[in-house]
Image 1 (cartoon, one colour):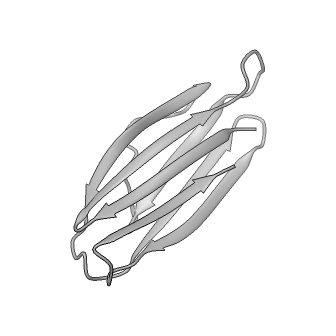
Image 2 (cartoon, one colour):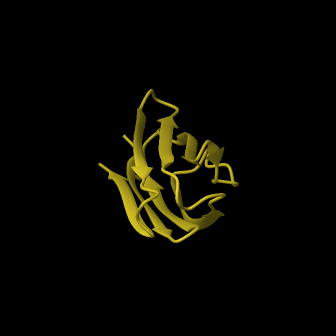
Amino acid sequence: MVKYKITVNKDMEMVTVHYNLEVPAGGQELIADFSVFIDGKDVIEESASGNTKFFGTTFAKLADETKDVPVNFSITSNVGFSADGADVLRGGHPFDDASFSN
């Protein structure tokens, strides 16, 4: 099972995504795929495939901070684990957050 924590922070038109994924050490499981979509665009530019740990921070700029923006993520591993989720960064709020973890 991939252990994950993803936080998405909206600050006006800027969005910051912090992510930390890992699988248990010594096993056969590896991260197969990881994506975070902000308003339909995958903001994770590096491939997580084949890693036991994958972490970092990435940024995105919203086209219109006054509109609601969907946030989605998906994770898979090479042994059948999968997780996904969705939230919305609210346009009427200059600051908003979304978080996902297990």
